[in-house]
Image (cartoon, rainbow, N blue to C red; front, top):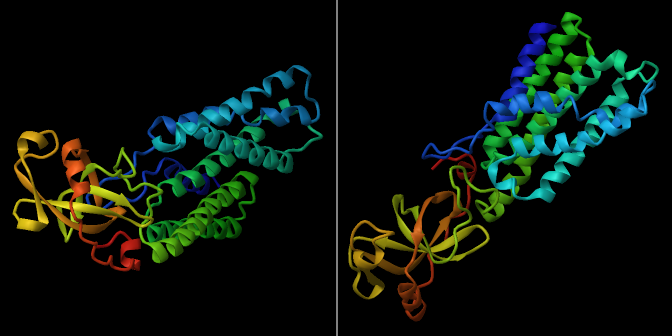
Length: 332
């Protein structure tokens, strides 16, 4: 039972801190860090406190300690969440409240109410630890799963591991509640990844790569009109000026090193030195670029040129290719 629990615990730990699949440039979401498992290890001691007074043998002073449970749940939910979610305090608080509800439900189901809480403290903590790690791993996998097919793949792998663990447990006679709960936690993470991946795949195939969740490796998102970004245009990496945002793509004006006479605007380095590295030309032909093809932000278009662009005739964009399963799997 110890070996099976160790394997399942390692799978759950990896899901808890995963940075998710990277993009074709090798950029990934920031991972949760070495401190995340220790934060969950310590926080899970406090999350079951709100239900301790409901157990037989609880003393009046234990009601005061119950207030630390929500604080610990909020701290853990914020610690494991990706950086862009942390300023959204209401969203993090909602995750923390649901965590307390799930932990309380599992504790009241698995803990013997006829035994004093102090007499089964180890069981209460183990249940809280497994449920908390599994719950936060579900959110972590969903938050870092930008490409639907890769998210579906990861969900299927996790479900296969949970199935193998259940088979191992049954044929080895390992009927301990902790092992059963570990199998269920890994299965829950797999189901979460699978359902989120399927929902995002349908949206991806209908509307193309979404502007949310943000692609990995980008601190500033989404692109804003007037910003200059590095992006892939016609299979080449080049600077672009963002013109306007659409639901599944952005319309941009590409920066080139050649003059196209009427269809181009000269960009002197003297005014663009903070954004470009050489004299260049700006195409006035709008190009539709999927959000997955934006690589990094370079800066903002100078105000004088942004006003000039607004007075020039900008040609309509070419039709964007329909999104495919290859793009949903992060393949070119």
